[in-house]
Length: 485
Image 1 (cartoon, rainbow, N blue to C red):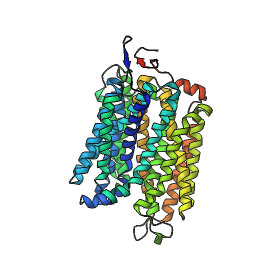
Image 2 (image 1 turned 60 degrees about the horizontal axis):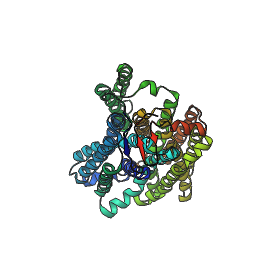
Image 3 (image 1 turned 90 degrees about the horizontal axis):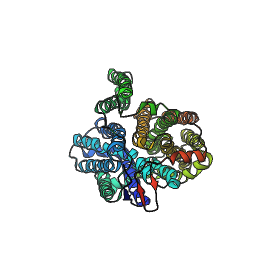
Image 4 (image 1 turned 135 degrees about the horizontal axis):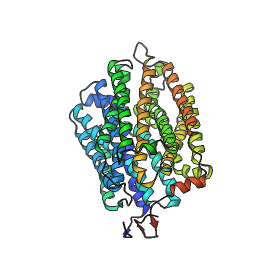
């Protein structure tokens, strides 16, 4: 590759663009959750059909996230970052103008391609950030996944009531379009590439088993877990994943390196990602419903959409603050210890929500502890995955980690929905026992997350920093060269 020197944009400018990109995508994951009934009314559809606004986005993101991460490793992370942002912006434009539910669902599929911003951002950060800033930068970007999800729930009500439901999409469209333009102008192209073309058949198989799995899980509460449709989809997913893994082990250049994925330093953080995804998506999704339950039920707070969003604000703030401070803490005590502490903190918060939710003060305590715990785990995972793989594998490894978290979210939301709807009153209101049982189960999942965290190979703070610093570039104060170190 020679010693050609290229002037690089200042790393903090690049970081700011990446933060906006990741935050925008995370926001779109939840922005529609509290206002689905309003969307159903505006588009003249029923509640069953409008849930596809969420399902389509989930399916699309699950397919595109690891694939775009791998494509970025091969053809350039900046190029694919811009593509992801443009797809997110285009999908938002179509959704804002959608005249029917069918067009809205199609727009959400396009938006899902924005999931590529997560792995691409992690890869660019590894390429561009100074070594001393790397773990902190990864922690902040990781935490934005949780922060954006929580912020979407907070902002949905005020946006819809103040500007109309179309601004759920106009606002992200404007932000992501500007971010794409700025990325073209200032984000440097990645000097690290994985040689070879992206294998098409493994990509198609990955897409097929993910769609079967997530469609079956997400629709199980509606179709029934024992329905032929759900069982058929889950069986098909199991068969396809076996075929996919066997093919990945045989092709010369795999889409996802199974030998990399089989290392404990990689699969243990992925197991943690699955479990924290279960707890985060389910708790963030069902807390507003608990808060909005009428006081006549005997346990609800009767909050409006806006009020429930504001009550969720401490969770988003706590998650963001953890992203700012957890990098330096991990360097001191080691990332595994940090993840275990975060998992147990989240479990305590979910227990508080399960048993004490009759007053605003009790709920805020539980929500804050849950946000702290989940924020700690989220902020730590990217650094662990990045530290475990070589620089040219950063995109696909972090993409799979994000994708596994999404799978956990689909499972968690489906299980929580099944538990809550199994306890309905004659007025179709969930009984308190449904929420108590559901949040207790989620607390148990976070305890399992702590157990899984103990399987992560032990890294001292110094060794953790050293693994992150395996950058392939020589760095000077004004430039970087694409010469292997």
